[in-house]
Amino acid sequence: MKIPPLGFGLGLRTDHYQHIIDESPAIDWFEALSENYMVAGGKPKHYLRCIRENYPIVLHGVSLSIGSSDELNQNYLNSLQNLIHEVEPEWVSDHLCWTGVAGINTHDLMPLPYTEEAISHVAERIIQVQDKLKRRILIENVSSYVNYEHSCMQEWEFYAEVVARADCLMLLDLNNICVSARNHRFDPYEYLKSIDATKVQQFHLAGHTDNTDHVIDTHDHDVRDEVWELYRAALRQFGFVSTMIERDENIPPFEDLQAELDVARTHAVEVLGPDLRSDVGLGAG
Ligand SMILES: [Fe+2]
Image (spheres, helix red, strand yellow):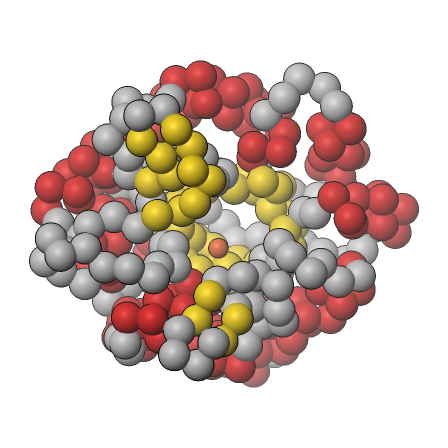
């Protein structure tokens, strides 16, 4: 069972804290980066607490390193557990990747080899995390630039199997699919077709840098046309899924991101019909 959808959200960025608190913009929810708030006290925590009073929050992590061969980091999980207790997020997500080994955090989201061994390894670790946090988590597909010689299946087959075995949910990043599709020369629509609608809890949309012969997942541009096209196909296939725009660099004024989120809303209404908001039980915005 999926969690009821939240509507159209934005990533919570420090540049926008004060605007959100002062103006209460019509955004359905915010996604907060877990690691920014896994500390006792401090200004970011204060702002998050204020914003949480008026908006649903989901937590999104970048350091779980679910694919690493290191032991799961129990200190990290304890801090995440404390944050969950404080924030009461609608859901919690991280990435299908490894970020380091031998205790070193590279702060990069590195892809896994697509093998049976890696499926068992990652699925078992997701189950351990879910048991510890006492909730299903969402796992996001990452963008990638390299392949492993040992891979014996496609990324989408690997992702679907990990999620099925761990009984977790998917945070499907449609920009990452477009980036990897260009870099590895696969069809992004074939990727989508293999995904089970009952698993997809959230979409990420973002912009990337197109260097013609390869594409880099920079999150510093508006959402590109090919990502909007894939979003429309995803809505046709899955129905409405909570949608969020990620912007991590070159962060524009809040109103610009709000306008871009309105573009997402327009696509969703065109694909799913004008009754979308009442159909999925969403408020105004
Ligand atoms: Fe993402």
